[in-house]
Length: 214
Image (cartoon, rainbow, N blue to C red; front, side, top):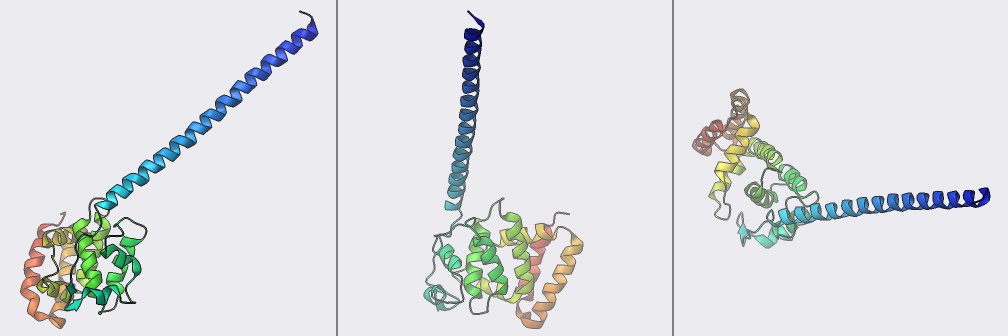
């Protein structure tokens, strides 16, 4: 083999090596992207599966003495809140949870029964993934609207899970110092606005105190 032929042979060999290295890199990158895509699809599927179990399944004919259609047709109620009521959105879909929780605190007195109803369903549905956020909103709502909360106990269409509410509020307050301040604030509001439910508050707060972390 002369020098020219030998050089040509070496060049061909180098081109083949470069070709195989390039193809190996290409297939490696290709399979990485495929794996990422499959993983994303699995995660989306898992999220969808979880949300199937975190959708509202409780429908009512009336709410706070009004037909449910009054609220479903109300322009002051967000469309996602209505979709959650109908079971079309789950707790983890988009901004559903944040939107409902914020509206519960800031909405008008006319629409508050509807927002409280669907938030109460969220409390019932909530699990570890949403527990901390939902618990903080339970504490906030009771502090701001204790009369509305306890008067809702008399509404047959509302099934308040007292165990979950007291547990969530107790866990959020954590210690006796925070509990004492919270109890004083709620008690002050009730004495001024709805003194007829003080006995109910007392029983409720006994349960909350038992749920304190320390």
